[in-house]
Amino acid sequence: MEIKNNLILALDVLSGKKAIEICNQLTEYIDTIKIGYPLTLAEGISIIGILKEKFDFKVICDYKVADIDATNSKICNQTFKAGADAIICHGFVGSDSVQACFNSAKKYDKELFLLTEMSHPGAKEFLQKNADAIAQMGVDMNIKNYVAPATRLDRLREIRNIVGNDAYIISPGVGKQGGDAKKTLKYANAIIVGRSIYESDNPKIACENLIKTLK
Ligand code: C5P
Image (cartoon, rainbow, N blue to C red; front, side, top):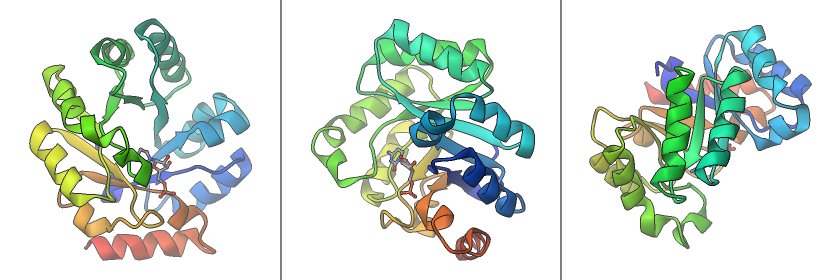
């Protein structure tokens, strides 16, 4: 996936109006957004098509799909039918569940991102212990796209080592969660940034300043 400025906006706002208002300010800098349950539950799945039509952005749906294979297929199919360019699934549910998401992505000619380890402190309790194995499962399954944390660069580096340099890693946790943008991009292909842009008094300036730090 080609991502402008290697920056993905995590748009976890609670109304379509707010989402559009923020996107309008950022079109110069951003061509890819990540939406998740906050915005989708507030506005319905049609928000994907609405944002795509208005901005021609790539939309990654962070639905952290984590169910049995049959249910995962339905979730992914509905998401791609609604216009998503990519979906994020959890890996801890195992290869059959992940394969169902991968098959759906292939059917719609869209992308799947496999989530290896999350960026928040709680990820250390359960997920981190299995993150390397999850990444290795992705490699064995020929998955090319991964999500790995900007908040723990040693872990991000390790996951990069496992998935290899040809894999595409997107990394959340920059800004509000403490991750550093430039350091993260040593190992990740793109950073995911939410609150430090959309909660800022001036999202455009926040975005511009962040991009300057990447140079
Ligand atoms: O607001 P902030 O910049 O912390 O947003 C980070 C985004 O990335 C949120 O949408 C969060 O749900 C998501 N995310 C994460 N850690 C992961 C996967 C996704 O923080 N491992």
